[in-house]
Amino acid sequence: MMDKAAQRCREEALKYKFPQYYYFAWKTQIALYVNLKKLPKAMTLLSQMENDTRLYFNGYGKVECYMLYGNIYKLLQNEDEAIRYYEMALELSKRQTPQQDNESIYTPLAICYRYKKMYEKSLAVINEGLANIKDPNIKVREFRMLDTKCFTLYFCERYDEAEEVYLKMQDPKFDSIRKAVNT
Image (cartoon, rainbow, N blue to C red; front, side, top):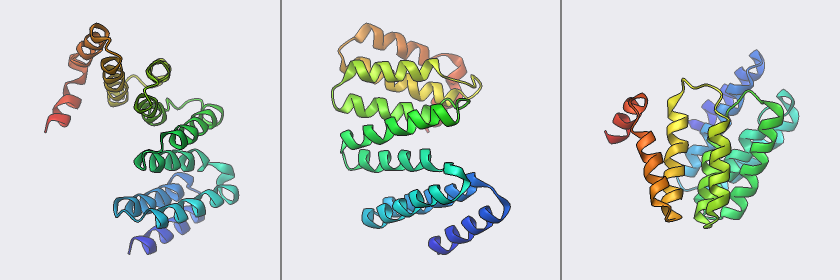
């Protein structure tokens, strides 16, 4: 059913020229196979999605492809490949959509560097992400980056700095996010 629904969604998105829905259908379909632990199928679909980025919407989906590759390699604990794809996604996104804050790239990229015990690189990435927040009204993005920074500082054994970041996360502006996480 998912394959048929995703195909229909892509057809309608092409018909009405909505690239975000076209690639959303691909991402949802791929996520299903990742969640079902059918990674060969997910990778086949991702390869098809990547081919589509050359055909439809002038490369719009390329960043999404790189992100998905990064996510899958991160899941497979292949941080080197995940980092490679996240960095490609970040670089392309900065060029093509400079209005985006790219938290969805900065955070997993910083986490991969942390997994590799490249703490200073992880902190540099997350600090760049925090400095790049475009919409201060979307607090969840800032919260996720602060959370990543706090954990990274903790792993660096920079406990005083980690506590400072943790205290920032207690700001009342994050109350609804903390409540959602704790439920």
